[in-house]
Image (cartoon, rainbow, N blue to C red):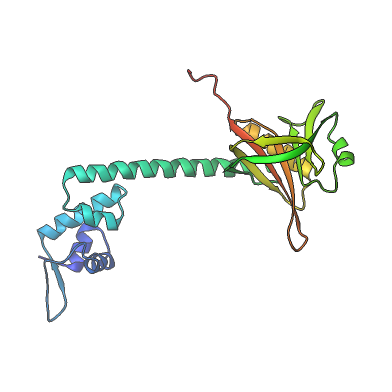
Length: 242
């Protein structure tokens, strides 16, 4: 039999860990001296402790290990299958997060785009064809409630735009869609933010699938915010077989 300190040194864990395992019922000593309070462990407890540590190395949390220590192999395999799936999702999420952070370091932008799913939207608009973005300033109210532009990058010629106005006669319905959304910082203009957003979409291999929406919002305190929203989908990889 071994005392708690001896077992801790043998296995490479702390005495505090063994006391915690005892407290939660995960690893109870073979016997406890009623007079001294010393915990004593035998071969059975050693084997159980090594199994606990082995399951921890497989990514299982203690609360799940407690249910699996004496479970049949089929139940353990099912738990490990679910754990692997969760870990792969976590890895994918962390990989994406790291890629976005690296992108911001290598190509600083005025915006922090977010991907989200939005529902359908119905608008009454007045559509127009423009030769240059500067024309929008003369045509738009100050500011327009919503501006739509059909662009896939910085304008290189004529392009279509639309404004939501009370006297508009065209009804436009936007379907449910995945969008990249960015709030334009107060220190950055909408034009620069739009250019940065188009560049971001290109770097992340996203194809624009509809009009860019520019919403001008004002809260009860009179504070203003401009939100850019572009529907998109991943650009197909031509090297992959269909």
